[in-house]
Image 1 (cartoon, helix red, strand yellow):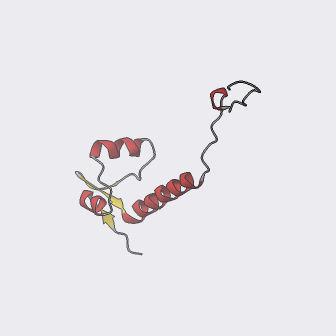
Image 2 (cartoon, one colour; image 1 turned 90 degrees about the vertical axis):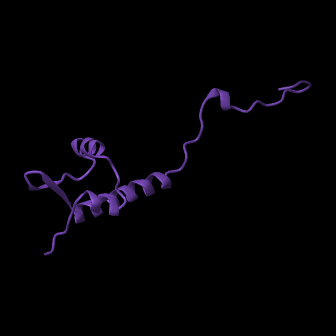
Image 3 (tube, one colour; image 1 turned 45 degrees about the horizontal axis):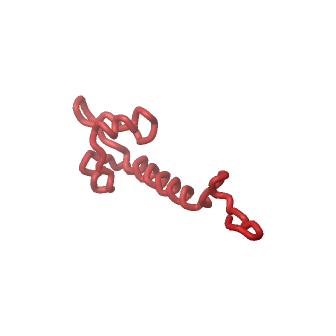
Amino acid sequence: MSIKVLDDAGLRAKGISYSRQHRDRLIKAGKFPPPIALGSNRVGWIESEIEDWLVERIAARDAALAKPAPRPRGRHLKQTVPRAGGTA
């Protein structure tokens, strides 16, 4: 099994150009794959985990687009019926 590790440039090459601070917030919230330590001052991301994350993001987008638009509700949206001999 061959594991490819991505650095910051590798993430950017995949179209992920988040700042470090934003990436850290997403990682802390569980919304982005955490990095692995490669050394005392070096981290990287497993390419397959990043690709899986991208697939999840695409699926979330597609699911949101597939939902029908909610019907507007409320009294202000009711159509008035014209009354006999007058205006609505």
